[in-house]
Image 1 (cartoon, rainbow, N blue to C red):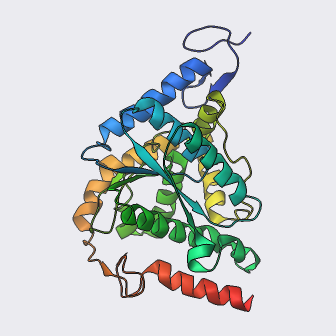
Image 2 (image 1 turned 45 degrees about the horizontal axis):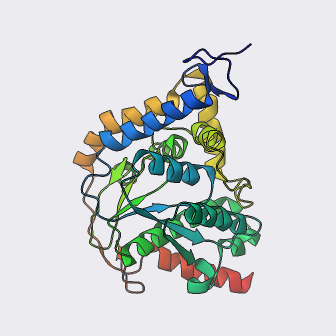
Image 3 (image 1 turned 45 degrees about the vertical axis):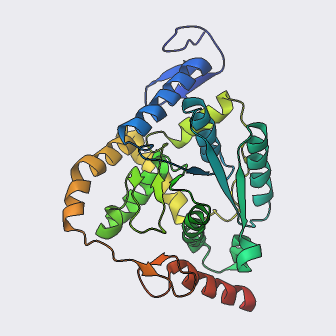
Length: 310
């Protein structure tokens, strides 16, 4: 009979922890996970100086794990939830139901921003594009811009996202492969505000994995959007994540070691050699931008043209 590697009891379910090379029962796993997240938040000073906090929630396992663990660890901190309705067929409806249910049950303020209502298109409109591998990148630009916009317009000074270890390592892996020094220097647990309209961002789950987020929502019996985004098939991001997992089979704890090496060894050097960004207001939306028109507004214009000519 299998036993928990910590308490030694024969409890079920038992979660197989590849990083620890052991099995953990629900109570021991929850203790491990919550300690890990709490230590991350405290180590990087994520809550230092926070006056008004928002948490971005898509409804997937990562963001639902973040909402729950934050509620458990920091019950004295009041926060609101921001959800983007991206209009993805067979996915977005499930996502918003999950987020709404959690917020109602826990008396948390929920702000929903509808992409179609305010911008005239949805991410689902891109499903017929020939180059589907670009959709995740397009979606990322849309989400980053709108999350910051909603947080800024509602007076939040800090935005927490559910990016976990797998997400961050995949991004870093791609940036290092392409030698994108400027972007590399911005990947960190806490991204400070560089402009009054650019909200400070934190990643409380940056040291826990995809698998651990899934185990946590299962152990806590949380609802989460179980359907995978139908547009993700063939995505280069997914291919890179799978490659990284194969590397980890040969190099134990590769993801964690990669992140730590970036933060401790390379990031200080990158900061010295990267040029500070000068931001201005976008001529179209007035949000922070490097050029006269921000990436989101340029992209939105192209998307509307794609949709009209599809």
